[in-house]
Length: 337
Ligand code: SAH
Image (cartoon, rainbow, N blue to C red; front, top):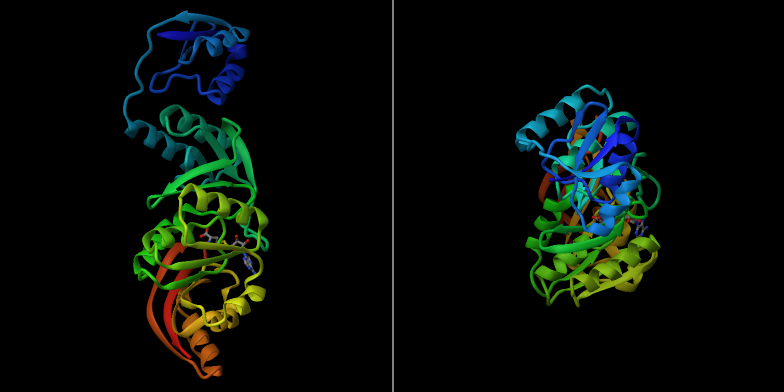
């Protein structure tokens, strides 16, 4: 097997280069002999030639890396030896996102890149999700330096820059759940639409429906336009703007309203009231104390009763854990004005 042979001093540099350009042949063990390190390589000859800057191109026998199980165990070991690292990782297309201190992150990244051929980039969460646009900072760890994800979910594809917009693959089931409830032909309003996952998945499922999708972050909006195109949906109406200001334009429009802004949704119940038809269904997301999961129910009822509307709770569920003390919940309810 073709390989790159480098002396120990250059090994780290060479490894980084190989990972960054996808030239390390996966599934085989790197080994050392005397004072040299042997890397199995693959790639076209032009790329391989450039490796001569690190050492010699040669030929050697490599041992196969055994099973997936080994790598999982090793990953577990690395994670449990760190106080800060979270279990597992999120995969956004070929970008793996991990949550660990820089040193642990490097160890995890090396293992991920070597053992999973679908992973090309490893990033590390470098802040919480914060601010009006619900964004997070990411730090580059290893592999190809790329921040643009191409991520598939429930038969749709989404492109976005992870640094510029909110996106969580952990809401995938929730998006499928909502899309499956929509009746073809309903008018739907997705508030806080981000790069468009709720709106597009609904629109695909219900091609006769009109789906209005409002997003305030211009990058979110830009990627939503792109994603509408990528998914070839014709029935999403993307809007750049503030839900509070746009609601009045869609007075009495919606049979169904999706409110995926768990931190603030309560501030937008008045907009939901304006947008709702005489009868409408609302999907309301919020972060709540683990111990008081569905406390918002009472608040929702009281809010709409003020306007003389009736509220009926249809369903409620925990969507995902959020922090040590909080979970994200969704409450599905109907209102009758
Ligand atoms: N629904 C998307 C995004 C949810 S995050 C998804 O599932 O991926 C919430 C989004 O609401 C963010 O993109 C943020 O920029 C947007 N946002 C926050 N306040 C807003 C407002 N007042 N009007 C419209 N969008 C808003």
